[in-house]
Image (cartoon, rainbow, N blue to C red; front, top):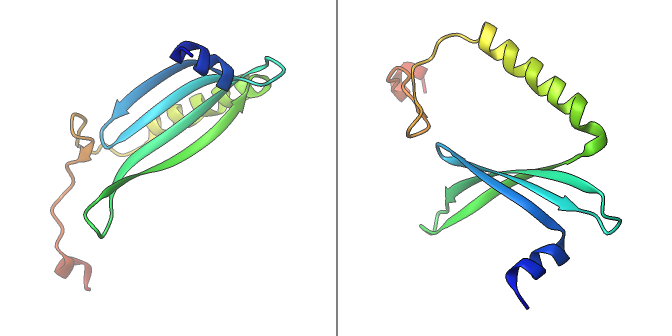
Length: 110
């Protein structure tokens, strides 16, 4: 059985991954048994365990087409708020790490 046929049987129709620093986001278009399309958005982060091996921590949301407009509207409003109100923070986007000030534990009073 071909990989393409297996994908269609599982309901996967389209997939786009976006690497963003230490995270990867997956946007997957799937279909229900009734051939209704929906979107899953998965955030995946690589984590190292105490045993030295790594695992992936994943968080997933399901977004159905009847909710697309309200979701996009809310997302755009939240992004606009952040762009207009968030304080400037120097970041290194290539590594996904923030370049904040150096703080030692002594500075925190611990």
